[in-house]
Length: 246
Image (cartoon, rainbow, N blue to C red; front, side):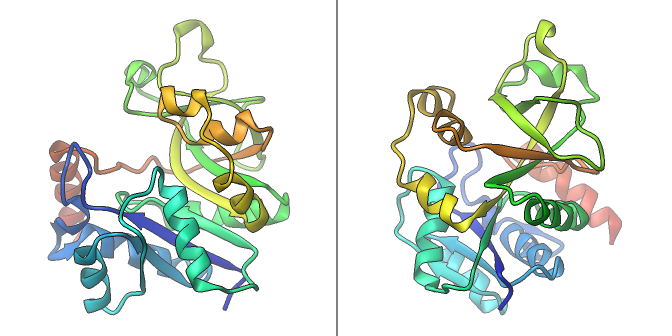
């Protein structure tokens, strides 16, 4: 087994689009599209982590690997940590948390994130892309990250803050955050054992728990801006894009 594994947290009870992991695109469920993307990176073993028997059955019947966790977790990171513990593999050094609702995630971006995190000995690393549509700054459902310096293709930068809305006076070095993380294993263990902070709870951004506890988050520039499936409109848009490519 590789020293890095990919874990994909998934659940059925999303408030805006219930049962979305099981919705089909090209006769394949969204969760299986994401799982296949994870495998195609060739980084290491990949597993879906879920508390829902229906998702577990869907992944297993299609030949995938899935770990059944307890049903209720406060965050996706808590869920992948339970899955990591169940694997009980002491050789794993890095864990990638890949969101289960981004079937169009760019494989090269994932591989680049992995390579840079290892080269830089990152505690936590994530991706962000440039904001081309100015209306995104005010969209509460799209998370932004502000970095200490301008992101470039070759350089990794430290995150200063993660925000849901960015004011016009504060847009320098602000980017559209992409919800994929790679954790060094000892930092993952530390993170999930920390209490949720007021910042994290009020802003509904779990990465603020790390920053509030002086855990640094490295940010790398992504080539592509994937569309997450959060609403029925998102699903129909991605379905159209992915089925058109076939």
